[in-house]
Image (tube, rainbow, N blue to C red; front, side, top):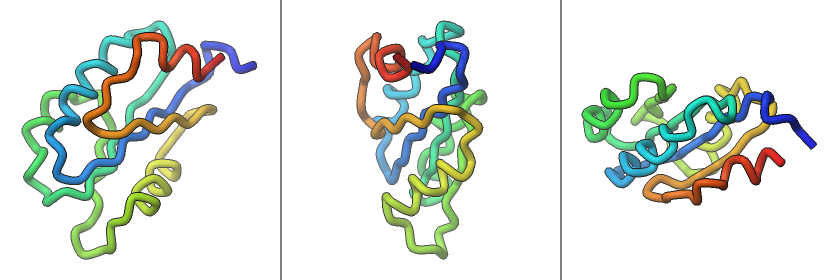
Length: 107
């Protein structure tokens, strides 16, 4: 079992879904209970989610180049490449996890 001091990389892939804002707001409430980083791999048009991106400066946001094919598996693989954590957790944009979601995954 991993300790709660392990770093968890939470990876979210998104394309044209403004619902990611609610997901990020909820994830921001995790605070310091569990060491984590949040990585968003965005396949939207570059400016579509810029306003949301600015609201969450602690989130590592990767803008997938529009010239490349952007499939969900490719986005997830890029998120894994960027991750620094010992544990990788995926959550979809526009998804609100239970308050105990991340703690249960770490356990």
